[in-house]
Image 1 (cartoon, rainbow, N blue to C red):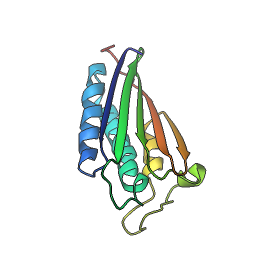
Image 2: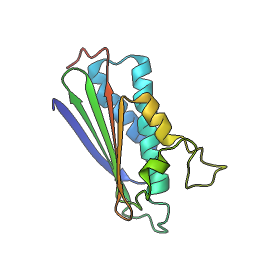
Image 3: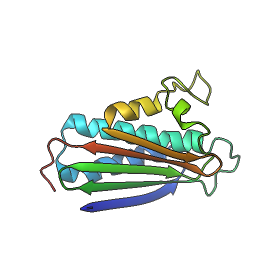
Length: 148
């Protein structure tokens, strides 16, 4: 690993944009294209939003509810972003990754979060245990990596 950044923040909707911006700023060392940066920001936004909205959906008291995001840069322009929560977990990850599947109100949620992450990143891995939380690991290989 050539560079790593790890942050923990409250599972509040207003922190989604902060996480997206932090990931984008960190990746800027690789001199990504606007398209690559937009894809990373969008994928991070989806992963963090899922943790905040779905991970802690059954908690009436969200004090102490946290999201952890770790961004790593490797030689050759490989970027790995890990988003983790200690929420309710996903009962059936395979089903949850199907397009249009949602556990939320279908009028408010599109069920496209994992699909968006998969389409914008080169690799997506979801590890979850019901009652213990979820880890989303996204990998992107940048074509223009000149920084590291």
